[in-house]
Image (tube, rainbow, N blue to C red; front, side, top):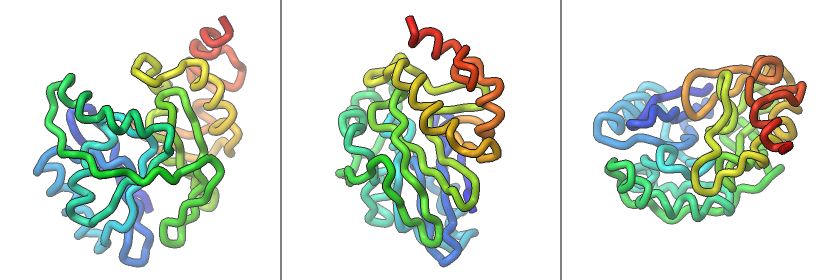
Length: 223
């Protein structure tokens, strides 16, 4: 079962997947201060789990602010796509630019690739590479349970920003239909900001990328 915490000044969604066996995976740890650390620990204690894996959809500042703390507490290096290593390394610089504190980042494990399966206890998640918002952005798909941990690719009525270093609007306009809209319409998308949505709802009505190809981002990419 997925649990979510809203973290840091950017309102990032950190997810905890309870494996059901006393262990759990954390996705995109954005915890940025002692209060958020305490809230996270309270959830972990309530679930009765130990964090045994840390997975990143991508490495923008708001999604990695808790990686140092997770590493210090559980000895875990964040697993990520190799193409987002530069994004990850920019984290401390980005923190300075935004004027927010951030712990030192631990060395990442650059082992996630498109099409691979990641085991989270009994959950088998498919990794899909969905570039555009970040070069190495991936999503994690649970085909058995009908959900996606989607990071900053697809939101309710919106899509990820394409004006940051490493972003590419054309890539995002192409990768959402290819990697997300090919999933069943009832699959729930748990995004990196805001509440959940479904594949079907966004295919039908997302103003930026939709099934008809008339989305703002899609039209822009055709120019």
